[in-house]
Length: 294
Image (cartoon, rainbow, N blue to C red; front, side, top):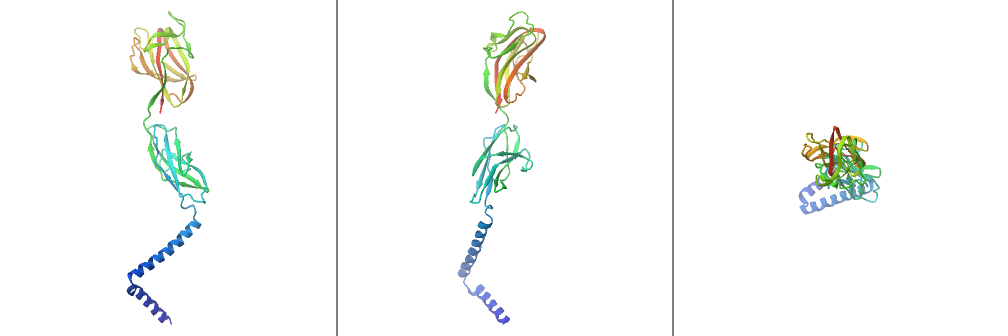
């Protein structure tokens, strides 16, 4: 009996391989493949409902020296999807991970975006999109971008034609007025003026900085035979250093333009202090510019 069954199988195989036409073989192959694929699809759709969720990290946009817009995409959301947090991991080091690196929440979905701020200029950042579904975190591929060089932009200015809202101090005045006043002999028209100043003298006013920035202004501390003095800048009562010359003439016969050290964001009480030492000076301040980094 076993010999007969073996002989029958061998005969069937010979018939399939030699007698059956190529067309019939092709049809049978397609039928077998369709049955197998149908079974796999049914299995996957019932047992692995979240396996089709895909998170993509898209190209960033609007990259500046301090910020960038991060974009992500969720694909193949199905009825069993329960989305939680949506956002991005980012770092200045590659291979970002949720254990070690910063995280920012995003808005939207399936396309989502987060505006990343407070970045450092000319710095490479790595990031990847991440989406929580049913308590499991899914990640997109890691991408990178480099912030641009920081640019200073003029936000506002003061032509120094009024002392309204400005506190002043004139120490040990010599010949001339006892207080700061408005003079017509500024760098460009009128200016704040303290004649015959001696020792420490200052002007003080409020200013708001939305971003980091600096002050620039023209100053003259006139006394024949002496150079212009670089003033000290105070923010909310604390010195941040001297404003250094960037244009003009050090000779006190002329004006020079100075730039302050970096000023942090915030509403500040700013003081410009000029120490003339033991000599008299005629101090003029004009054309104050408020600049901020983009």
